[in-house]
Image (cartoon, rainbow, N blue to C red; front, side, top):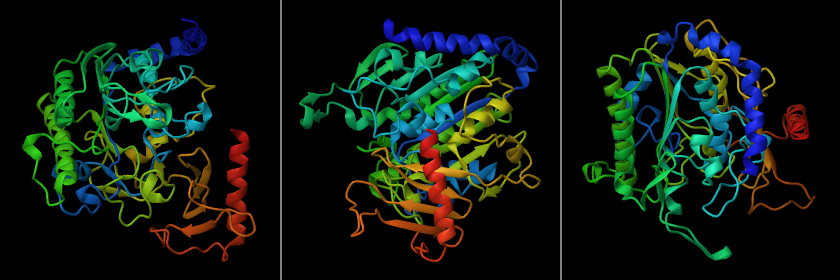
Length: 443
């Protein structure tokens, strides 16, 4: 119990600080506040959606979603792998702020997302929403770190990645158990048939939507696929030209379609914010025309497909090239939902609600975005069109002068990060280098 005392007190203090204001907010027009669904895939690349240039398979439901809202072409996640990316999504803060920026959590890990962090689920729950997560958590499998202690009323899914199912970690002589499957805090299955994970999550989402309360709801659908090992239900095997990978993406697209269809049947689609995106770049799929993939700080590792739809409020058919990230979702959803957040909570994201509602009349400001490698090193910064990259990842060596390779790219002209212009713009290199150093000093 001791491990729970400090975080519990911290969160209780936060709640006391702003509870009266929050109550005023969620008691006003609560029936008109939008439902929120975040559909989060695992390792789906920038070009693994039809409207982003997918080849060998089709995603008609996701493409239709894009036509009904905003499709972002410069949307990033704050990490190259699962755990820190999910932490950033749910906190609106760089994972290094709470020491969850290195690698991922494993079945033998003792830690998790700090209970001092005030998650998106807690923020929405404290302001009148019901909250649920369906699918993959991966922010700590010990009970104190699990979803029901992080603001989620309901949890249906698994605590970590599907490749950690019954896996032997030779370097520490640790045998992980069969993949645990939970409903809230109760283990309901061990080693589930992964062919049916996407289907099971979809069915659960539909059931929860149909059985919702009168309160607005926040639903986080965190699919396991297309993380390896790949699995699809029999109905989708052999459906694509890209083999099993394409089949898996087509089933995810079906899942989006089924959830949207249910929202429409329940007459709540128009007042539901539906967000589709991925946790990081692809391991097996495509990030074309971007350079790199999962676990790399090139854009292919952290620039992902992203679509936001709110039919009653957001204009249709918008394609946005403005820089945005999952860090922006926390403050944006707080504003849209009329939620109150503690005034002393340091967020790294930006409220882009005005931009979503009035894209033609709103210009998002330029702001830095920092890239952390899987080993925890800061490796890059993007500011406007410029990206400075300092390769510190494992497998790269210091040059003859004892300096890591440095490169500079104009992403407006060179989306593939092929043309290193570091020697042509020394003033930009100096400016961005100083920004990286100052940010690291702050953290």
